[in-house]
Image (cartoon, rainbow, N blue to C red):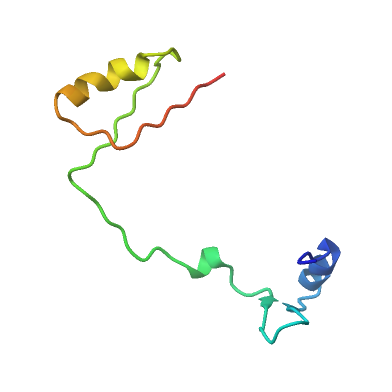
Length: 92
């Protein structure tokens, strides 16, 4: 069914018992659930990149009305400034 009962996983965690999840139809090893070091602790940041030709602009207090984004970004386009991504959040 590809589903484990939550109680089975809970007991494994409670008593520090590793759980092997595998298919009875194949020879695959499956997945081992255990109390090892979590991915968040194990996988540290490997690198950081930056681009001097990229900028982030935040505009606050913009009304949520049709045409507002065009009014803001139209002049940028006319000036030859490329806008790759626009994120709009409407608060209720």
